[in-house]
Amino acid sequence: MLTPDRARILDSDDPGLGHEFVLADGLVYLDGNSLGALARHVPERMSTVVRGEWGEGLIGSWNTADWVGLAARVGDRIGRIIGAGPGTVSVGDSTSVNLYKAASAAMELATGPHVLLTDDANFPSDGYVLSTLAERSGWELRTVAAGDIVTELASGVGVLSITQVDYRTGDRHDLIATTAAAREAGVVTVWDLAHSAGAFDVAVARSGADFAVGCGYKYLNGGPGAPGFLYAAPHVHAGMRNPITGWFGHRRPFDFASGFEPATGIERMRVGTSPILGLAALDAALDVFDRVVLDDLWARGVRLVDHLLEGFGELGLDVVTPVDAASRGSQVSFRHPDAYAIVQALIDRDVVGDFRTPDVARFGVAALYVDFEDIAVALERLRAVLAADLSGYRPRRGPVT
Ligand SMILES: *Cc1c(COP(=O)(O)O)cnc(C)c1O
Image 1 (cartoon, helix red, strand yellow):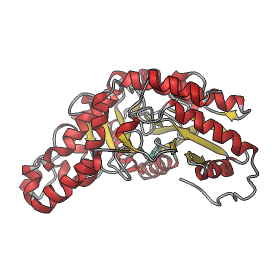
Image 2 (tube, helix red, strand yellow):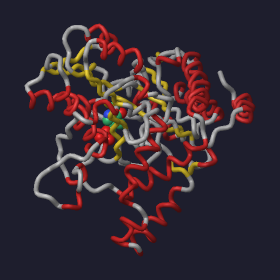
Image 3 (spheres, helix red, strand yellow):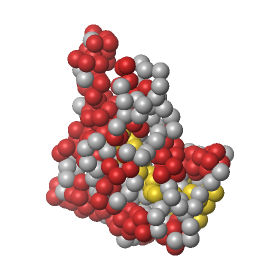
C-alpha cells in the first residue's frame, strides 16, 4: 500500500496543481467529480465581475465587458477541453435541460425506428428526461444493460443516449467504438460527458458523435450549479431544432420580431439570457486547464487511481471500478454493506468521498489538485475506519442524488 513517505517522493516527481486551489490543510477531497474545488483566483475574478461589471457598469457591461460574447467564448474553451472545434459548444442551462434539448433534436433528425436506446446504468435525471421525451413523442424508450448497447444498436434504433462514464462504478463506454457502431447502424448519438469532461481527452469531434452534453461543476470546477454545455457536430447544425425556442436562440434576438427564426449554427441551441455570474466563475475556473496538457493530466490521474484501487484491493474491498484505465473514468468505487457508514466516518476524518445508493462508496480523483499524499492518507484513514466500530453511523433513508 502507498505509504505517505513514498507518496511524498511521487509528489515531488509528478506535482499537481493543488496549490492553485482553495483546499484546507489536511483535507483529502475525493469528491471533485461531484463538485469541483475552487481555484484560488476565482473569488477575485468574481469580485471584479460583481462589483465592477455589474455594480458599476450595470447594463452597459453587456457590451463594455462583452457579456454578450461570454457564452460563446466559454463554449469554445470547453470545446478545446472535450476535443470540439470552435462554434460547436453552447454553454448555459443545466445538464438535464441540455440533454432534453439535444435528445429532442436528435429524435427529430433520426431516420431509424422510433426507439430511444439507453442503458440501466445511466444517471437517473437522464433517465427521467429521456422517458418524458419518449412518452411525448410516442417513441419507445429501450433500456438495456450497459454491456449490451453495441449489440442492441443493430436491432432497430433511432437515437442512442447514454452517459460515457457510469457515475457509480466509473465504468467507461468506448466513445469512439460505440459511436462508430451507431453511425454504421444509422443511429443518431447523444452522449452525456458529465463525468468525462475535464478528466480525460474525450475527442468528441473525432468520435463522430452527433450531440453531447455535460456538466460545468464537476471536473471543470465551475462552482455549484455552474452552467452545463451542449455540443452539436457541424454536420447536424443546419437540421437541428431546439425544442425550447427562446429569444437567445433567435437569429436576431434584439430585433424583437414576432416570429421565431432560428440562429445559424450552435447559437440556436441557446434559450434565454446567459447566467453571467455562473459563466464568469466557470470561465475563470477554466484558466487552470490552459496550463495542462489533458493527456498528461489523465496519465497523472491514472497513476493516482491505480494506487487507490490497489490499496482498496489490499484492504479486501469489493472494488467495482475497472482495473484497465482505458475502461474507466477518474474515480474508484467499492461496494460494501456498510458503505454509507464508511463514507460518513471518512468525512469525519477529513476524507471526503461519496455514498451512492444502495451500497457504493465512491471516490473521485481530480488529477488537477489531488496528489499522491492524499491517496496515502485516504488509505491510512480508511484502514482505521474499517477497523472501527461504525454502529453510530445510521444509514440515510431514501434516495440520494
Ligand atoms: C451530474 C450529472 C448530471 C447533472 O445534471 P444537472 O441537470 O446539471 O443537475 C446529469 N447527468 C449526469 C450523467 C451527471 O453525472
